[in-house]
Amino acid sequence: MTAATQLSVLAVDDEAPALDELVFLLQADDRVGSVDVASDATAALRKLRDHDYDVLMLDVRMPRLDGLELARLLLRFSDPPSVVFVTAYDEHALEAFEVRASDYLLKPPSADRLAETLDRICESKAANRSVPDDLSMIPVDTGGTTRLIDRSDIAWVEAQGDYVRLHTVSGANYLVRLTISLLADRWDDHGFARIHRGYLVSIRHITEISTEAGTSTVRIGRTELPVARRHTRELRDRLVRAARRGGLR
Image 1 (tube, rainbow, N blue to C red):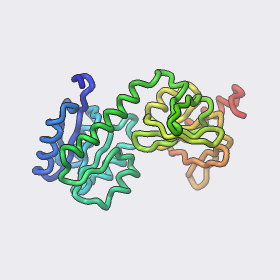
Image 2: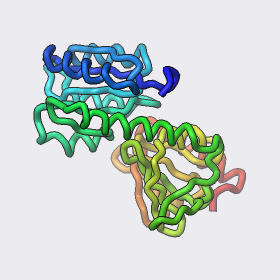
Image 3: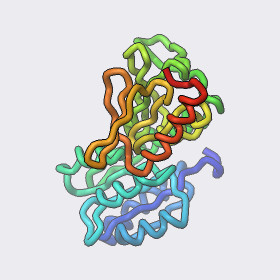
């Protein structure tokens, strides 16, 4: 891997010996170009606001702001780093994947286990770089056969970590190694809107938008999806503009 494609990593742990060991393992891997450190989540958040990192290696239990809370804050970022939890506790794994973590490692991670994690992250980033700029057709694997799914056949997209699940108008769905941030960026000019950190929808397939007790939802066929408050006004405006152009059925 060339220097241009090496990973930049921020490692966060309030226990110095554990942090030093993790940094040692990361620096020994030739896919890692740089390693920055923080001794708590608050310091890490400051670094994340000032610098772009490919990977965040994060302890769970830390004073004040813990690792899970930091990961939830990162969901608000337009292009967050891949989050990997490195912890002595196995009971937080479910919560970790609910905040879109790429992996969950138990302390002390072995060099081989860490290498597996970095492999997956590198593969995901390479896949994102290799897709066509317009993403008008998405290749999906179905039982050993590769099919091309036309963007116009996709009703909505669901984020699942470093993957997305494409939900088509016909009701079929496909898991693809792409990020929802990438699709939101490439498809914004093609009638798709980000309505939530976990959802991207085709505006022309929305049949209803409603608000009750301050909470908004959209309906696509039989599926109801939440709309984050910060996206509600923009979505309504786009629906109105599309309706005026005859873009809604």
